[in-house]
Length: 309
Ligand code: BDR
Ligand code: CA
Image (cartoon, rainbow, N blue to C red; front, side):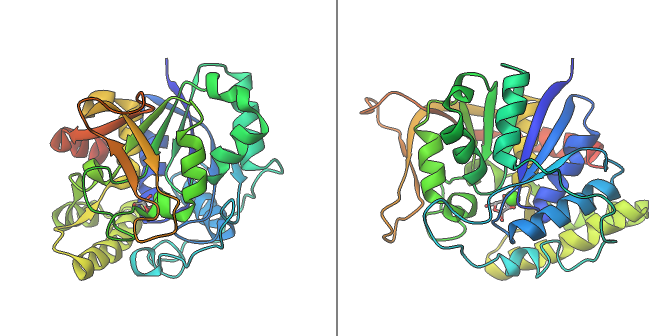
């Protein structure tokens, strides 16, 4: 039986790849896609999501627009350096013919979870605001959702938005902190593992040779993403952050996860939005999250390349 998933995105380049990978994966049924702010505004995320789903012939999957700003803070700047002005590396797609559903993202997460108790895996690959709002509105979903797989955090490695913090947690630290403490079953797919799963320029060359509308779009977009990675550090390609979160739902053996107590720093200081994992032999609190610390990157990247388009 296919695993039912809802994907919560701030579509972005790697979000676009995660969506395409999920809809083509024979193991998943994408029940709906919810949108949030992060890489770009929520309105842009919704437009990009509709465009990408239509491009990969999955325009029938319903899209629900979500939060436009963090729970308590001001909205941060868009991640233009990595994702371009439009979120898709400034590569243009035709305007979507479809539109988002009337229901909000948080309301959809609640209703789908209640309609399919213990069956839905939620994959969050943007700010965690929609999930926080859903839990606030309907705390019972904490025990009705099968699992939440979060692309976010950096428990044992440096951050990417700040020296210690990862972009999705930075987008709304209070939302992440609230979800982490909610008791919902969580798997954290952070930079600890996503920076080991790289797409390279050689892969893009293969997509160019395939020469389809979709393969050209992904190659052009990822070229921009890789140029940004090359500017900020010595990375040979780009991190497959959001696709790895989808991969972990498809096959949890792509990673090794360790149960850990993790809290989010919301101090507003230099360590703001850091995901602090208690890795001591005798931690002060019981584990609340399975943190992915190792990844079989070759096997995952092979699987991703097979199903992304
Ligand atoms: C995460 O931040 C966003 O820019 C990406 O889409 C990904 O979800 C990586 O830190
Ligand atoms: Ca994302």
